[in-house]
Length: 242
Ligand SMILES: [Zn+2]
Image 1 (tube, rainbow, N blue to C red):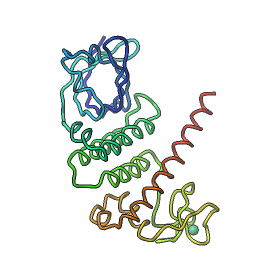
Image 2 (cartoon, rainbow, N blue to C red):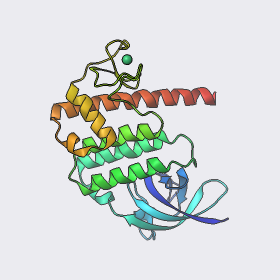
Image 3 (cartoon, rainbow, N blue to C red):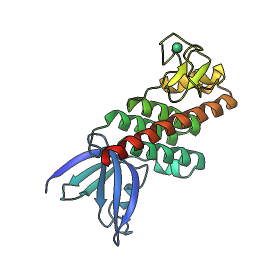
């Protein structure tokens, strides 16, 4: 048995036996990890409360034959309460945790950019001040970009012609010009394209000046884009396993 430390965000927990939990973490150095929290469901647990979803913790872990075991947990940021007590923040935050888990296909593979992105998004969510849906959409677009699926909302993804373009195609990766436009392309409002570009680049003054109907349209496009990539990812994974 050897000990190591890492900083982590708790993505998910599952009951294990009488009083333990399996805790799914996104760690700063080791990517996604599943570890065991022994006795954390007992009220007398020294650190059970620090190992709930949204917790940002500094951990000491002991290597084990199967899953490593938490031996110490110190809270680094306390934003789980500010997120969990507000419905809009909670649903946006839960989606962030779920997508972070899905985008880290391999356990133990470092994903430091995704870790920093998630930490920043949860911090902003807990702080309030920005609309949770827009924080979620910005997180999803940037998380997909970090995972290698950066969309374009300006130049044509097919021929590279400088935008703005009136069409968008989810499977083509974003904006498409009138000549390249593949079947299934949509024609969102120009303001929606500008909002998507602002969310991807972190241009909050532009994003916050947007109209609610363009925000709704942008959210629909982000959801379709995410679903397309996750389904494709899962399909490719199934093909590898069989
Ligand atoms: Zn084109």
